[in-house]
Length: 231
Ligand code: MN
Image 1 (cartoon, rainbow, N blue to C red):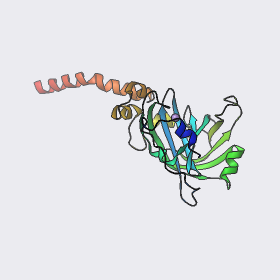
Image 2 (cartoon, rainbow, N blue to C red):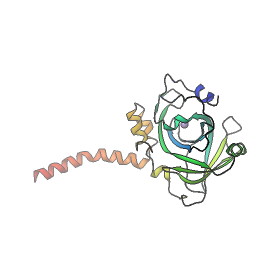
Image 3 (tube, helix red, strand yellow):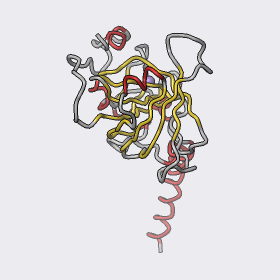
Image 4 (tube, rainbow, N blue to C red):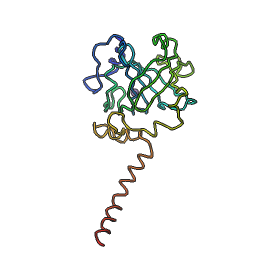
């Protein structure tokens, strides 16, 4: 009953999130799924998920991943999610657990860099390679006692290893769109009946400015059209 916590928190009569089928056996030889869902709930965060033992092991990363190996990003482990959750993009109704907009920000596969993943998770030091649309190369999740008190949610750090995919570019700002649909959070909220203004707060500020600018420039462009016609 690995998904007991996941199901306990949600009312599947109300939320469009998947309930998940029967738990699967550990997959042998099949590629393991990796997904990051950008989630504008009460706070913006990035849900980092790795398929293991038939579920998605999940961490909430408030600032999202960084390609810079000198930057450590806090990753709070949360309840395991069903593998089907990796395809979920949409709106969780307000008032429900995690109410807000969810975007599939990155997806692909992952490969452990250790022989025994269960032992690495137990030890709190999991090295792995990502092959996503946005994130690639070598990463590590390290368990830490430094944050979060000794509560049920355990804190980890998500860190990029030095390799040819390391970079100082801010991937969350430069690639803010859905890996599935190319939509921004505000687009997903608009399409699925969510709170567009709240969702837009999670999109990069310069894109919001650009949108406002586009709206403001409409009267100007129509008047320039008039000017062309009057010639
Ligand atoms: Mn979340």
